[in-house]
Length: 322
Image (cartoon, rainbow, N blue to C red; front, top):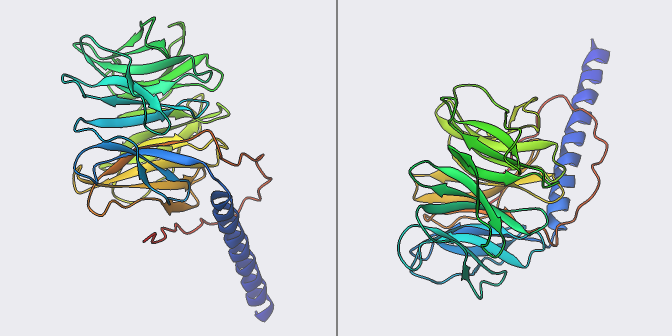
């Protein structure tokens, strides 16, 4: 009996050490990064675009305009940021500015609001949604030329890392599901099929997985699945709404926002891509932070280490940053 108890104690002690080691590894990986995260906040009275360090420090405002500025997206070389704005009046359009917030240029106009910009991997094109009589996704050159409609009844485009496909959400078959389509408009394929509403797919850097949002038990949560739609896994579990998600360049973490108190309060978090570690990055103290996107520069990309499957689940941590 004593031997069995001692063996059980040693087993759980070993598991605890493994879990602590995994937590420390992820914390050290985050601490070593010098990359930045661009995001939207209404902390100064209206929606503007900000940046912060990978650990949540040095939060800095990039735009200062009475208009609505939102949905920032880094260019692949980290020099530009695409975003949406209603500056100039009318519905939102796609703009591009320098990474320091200077020299904003309007790329789109015409009928329909434009939103959800996403750069192609080579930086030559931008995919986006058009909110019109029939919502659709389109692509254009990075200077706004060569506008091309890609797919009807679709929103939230996300380029695959090899530039051959675009993932998107569509309600074409009765429920909002995740699809992929070739950039030539051919080969549409449905990846999910259930009654839960879904949105905002995002390819992992290696193209093997897709993060997306889905409604679960009354709350919007973050999920990850294989690029073929298989092996779906729920990452977030707290009973609050989770919105935009974006991968780090090394594929080990995902940034996302948590919406509280209707749409008036939100915070940005990082979660390990296996769901085993969470770090809160922002708290606008009653205001709304959201739409995070991680810079491709300054992020320590390392090969995936060999992992031992551990029984149990690492405790979720949410440090107090202030």
